Image (cartoon, rainbow, N blue to C red; front, top):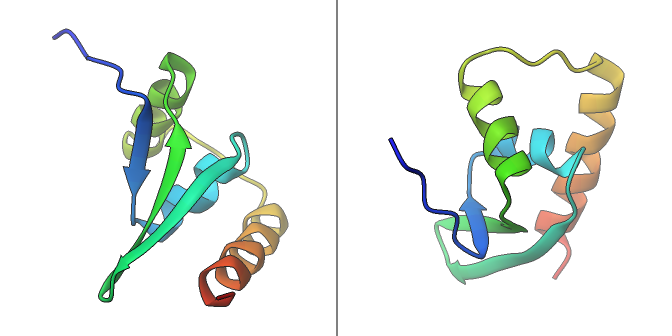
Length: 80
């Protein structure tokens, strides 16, 4: 399967956002939909590999690091 890399990778999955943001900066947060916030990251082959590893349960993240990043992401969500 050939995967096309677009400029941005968007997701609203909180666990995935936390995992990606540990390795890649958030490009922007889209709040245009009142029911869902989407996070955008610059897309790359490395990011795609990280996302695939996430969905395949191949990643191990230190729990304190994950929790701290969760707090940071939640602050970004509620910061208007």
